[in-house]
Amino acid sequence: MRTKEFHLGDVLSIIINRSVTVNRSVWTEENRVRTLVGFLTGKDDWYQHRPMATAHKCRLYLVEKFPQFSTPEMEGAVEDLDKEVEAANGGERAEVVVACWLEKQVAKYGEYVTVESIV
Image 1: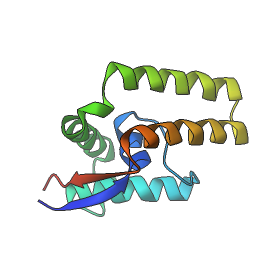
Image 2 (image 1 turned 90 degrees about the vertical axis):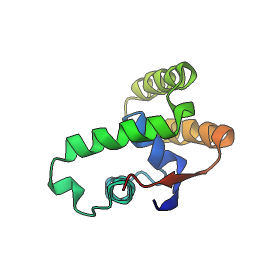
Image 3 (image 1 turned 180 degrees about the vertical axis):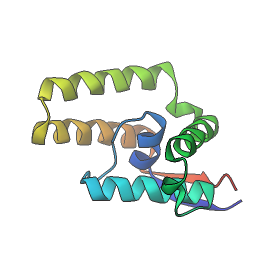
């Protein structure tokens, strides 16, 4: 098995099914998540073949490896995030809300997570 460090926001984006990557442009977000899932599966083109099933498999794997990111406390934090993003009505304010939320998670769990590949 291979290991590699990924930013906490990339790992959480898959686990909580929300976009919380750093530098959240559409291209950057998709690229970061694709890179993580590609690493986990050993397939760079995973998104061309059954992307939803592959992403779901990776989510389950990450939850198993990092149970601290799938606790009632984290679920509450995600609910709070959802409420704040909704209240921000999108746009730049929502981006700030997500960035602040991620900063809190980084302070608690660390900025990078060492991930082990599935294959």
